[in-house]
Image (cartoon, rainbow, N blue to C red; front, side):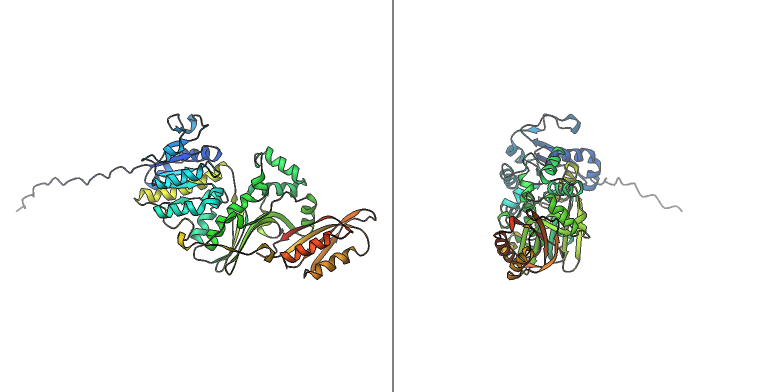
Length: 455
């Protein structure tokens, strides 16, 4: 006998998930990088939504000179002249600051944090000068600061130091972090141009600003080094603590002599942790031709890191340009947006890799105490006793000579005398060069370039 059928029950349908709220972005500045950022947003919108489970939307663009760009979907309704009003809008989640400079970038970043917005910036000068204030405000509010694009353009060095290498103790960082200077030095080396001609060529190509001072005098690299030092060594460093020397005084003759000795000349940002005493310096440096950094040419950047456990590793890529920099900005936006989409604020780990109260001011080793090998060039009269007099002064100051090059002959003319030294403290070298510069047989000021033989 068949069992009677149980009456059908109308089971309730599972509740529909509410639509995920879009992540809304306020963009401050739509210059070269800002435009690249919007291009990425539009081009990869579907991929970003799959990654996040939520869409990215542009809430507005603050730019006083911007006109509508229809192909990027920037209509007049998105353009805002008042940046402060934009960052404080309730619907905005993330503020992307691409104005550059100190103001209004600093004020707007702080206002955004006060209004509960996470901030992404490519502004290394802002963070180097005002980082303690901005990172402190973010930490206090439990919000994120993304700044991957501030060092190395498209090279993901910030995230690498903060996360991938967090389990190791870093001992040294060597960086080619200014694409303008690297491009100029590459032109001098490969095309045999003097500095002024190589700079003009870089300006025509758009690789150097009309006023290139910030780049060629080393200040841009010093700003970036401040951030690298904090991430690598867990101490706060200000630009005024960094010994900074640019590339203006480099000549084609010195580039060629360096190559003859087996070196390439690079503007290096160098930081070392000597048991708590930090070396922090930016200057032209002779790098052995066999080393990976010597082969980094053009506008590319590279950061070489030495840690206790991992040893040496290098991170290489395009250091500037619209899309490489925009890619780094977008990476920060996506990281923060993941947390936003998951209902969390901030981006997890502290922005600088250490809680702000644990970051102490760096104890910087005086430049006079830094020990280097040196390349020396003297313009000396071609007379007997010149080499002996120079070598005697160097010896009295504790500086020994590895090798000597001398080109040309002439009784009444000067000829270049090139010396490479063993390691010596900087103060010894300066004292010796003052004495050698006072010799009647030496014309002009002696030239020196530091050598980084060991990494």
